[in-house]
Image (cartoon, rainbow, N blue to C red):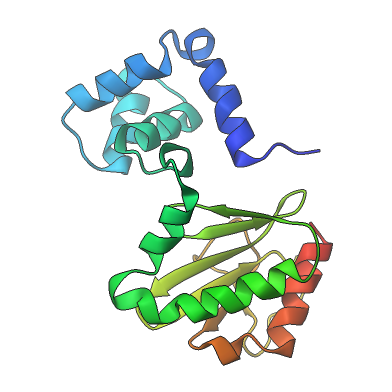
Length: 187
């Protein structure tokens, strides 16, 4: 069975010294000392100046900036933050999508900083409040033709094949629920 992203990160953390010559905490101190505050800048300096692979550099950047789900003590706080302020009106869409996904059967709801990942044995969907007026549902529906509201994911998320744009809870209708069920069944 594939590892969850959290399990993969824990494996990387356990192997940091062996693979990179330093512990994760030592790399975090190096990243902080650089004075850089953007994820991409930290990744770039670790890769170019320290010849670190992208995966390890990405993890150091996340841990330095505390931008990963593992750096938050309560993942419910991540969802609360996603639907705060001008995105608060989108929370009913999120609730409707979670209800639809849970009706499929066993799954893992894994909040991240900017979206929520839905997993069975692998990720099959994400829920992301993309704008103040829209939630994007990303789905893994390999082989499914894009038509109507079911678009190819394009640049939205390379880990998923399709996207559905939702502006109100009523948009989580029979058609959307069927797509969620199909993605869940394939995971």
